[in-house]
Structures are given as C-alpha cells and as structure tokens.
Length: 275
Ligand code: 6GU
Image 1 (cartoon, helix red, strand yellow):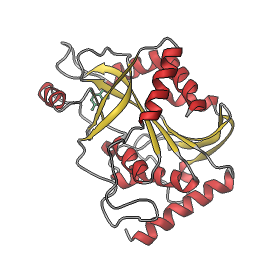
Image 2: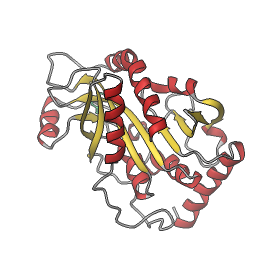
Image 3: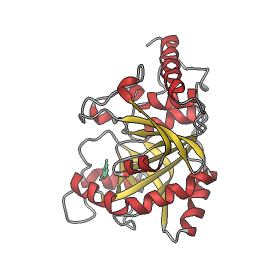
C-alpha cells in the first residue's frame, strides 16, 4: 500500500479511539492465551469492538472479533488488546502489527506482551514464567518491509535491546518481591500452526532459543521501530516436541495457562505501576 495511505489509515483508527477515550494511554498490553481476564481489572474501562475501529483488522477465523479496552490499572492509563492476530490465521505481518502502529499514534510509550510458548530449554517446566531477553525472528517476514514510514521511525532500526533491560529488571524485582521464580530467555517466533518436530526443536535449541511460539515478533518489531519500550513474557505451557515422551496438544497449553494465570496476573499487576 502507498505510504501516505498507510499513515492515513493509522491516523484514522487512532482518531476514532481518541474520540472514545481522550486520555493518552501510556502503556499497551497485548495478552496471549488465557490472560484475557486482566480485562476485568481495568478500571473505568471503555470497550471498543475491533470491528467499530476504522481500518482495524477483525478476527474472521475465531468467530469472535476481539475488542480494545482503555482505562486505568494502578493509576496508569492503559490500552489493552483483548484478542490478537496471528500469522497462522492467514493475516499478513502488516495486519498483525497494525494495532501497534495505532498505539504509537495514540501516544503509547511502553508495550507489555505475553504469549504461551513451548519450553525448549530442558531446565524449564510447564507453568514456568519467562521474561523475554531477546527474540529470534524465524517467521522470515518483517512488517517493516516496504517504504519506510519515516514519521514513525528509521529505515534500519536497531534491535540490540528489543526487550528493555530496564523493564526486565523491574520484572525480576517484582517477581522476587512476590516470591516467584522468573526465568529469563530467548523466544523464537515461528509461523505455526503445526507444532515443531523434535528435529526442529533440537535445531532451535542449538540456535539459542529457550522458548518457542507463534506470535509476538511482528508486534515487537513495529514497536521498536517506533521507539516503544517493550517488556515480554512467555508462559511455558508445555515442553516442546521431543523433550518429554508425549504428544503436544492445545488442551495442554490451555490447561497450563489456566493453572498459572492468577500468578501471572499478579506479576503483571505488580509490574504495571512500576513501568
Ligand atoms: Cl511447542 N510451539 C509453538 N510454536 N508454539 C507453542 C508451543 C510450541 N507451545 C505453546 N505454543
């Protein structure tokens, strides 16, 4: 798409949201499987269905469209995406990351992303929480391809600290205060939707990955391009293929995220006021 019209699309979506919630959201939250319940803790929330927002992608695959929540958490104005978009659903990386561009236009300065991921590091256990130190883009797609939107960021954005050291330190401090063990490691993002083979998992371990998933990377690339500070977490919902002698299932992913969601939520609620 033409550069000018991409910018116009972003601005139009942002203007619509501003009309419903005039305050500047400082922190944005994109929460993966199972953590949607955080939405219940947003105070004075304004809810906007994605389908109402001009140019916003709508989920055609999962049946229910998703919604944006704006409100406060711990006294901070937040924007929360209830429902995200994945490449495996058939969306392009530009669509998957479009909401992040709108966040920037709204004045968002910090992004907290979470996902469910398979454990690649054999020291990990299902139910572990991992703060993301860095990622490997194994989708081989990049939402920044195309004419650079120089109003948003530079042509060749630096990724040497994609996941903020400062925010990772906040996460470790809050986790320690809560008596929680928090892993830190490298997330590798693949296309999915099939889980990996044992040979692929041995490969990504060799490449330096600790956790494997199907989301997050596109959104973080766009956020960093725009200078948004990022904090990411993976909930290790299961061990990746070939580590345990058992097949992988989405049910296991859902069961584990459900089991740890209160702990995860408490951690995130502890972190938000300190971001
Ligand atoms: Cl094992 N792989 C991927 N790609 N995504 C996952 C997963 C595994 N477990 C949860 N999400």
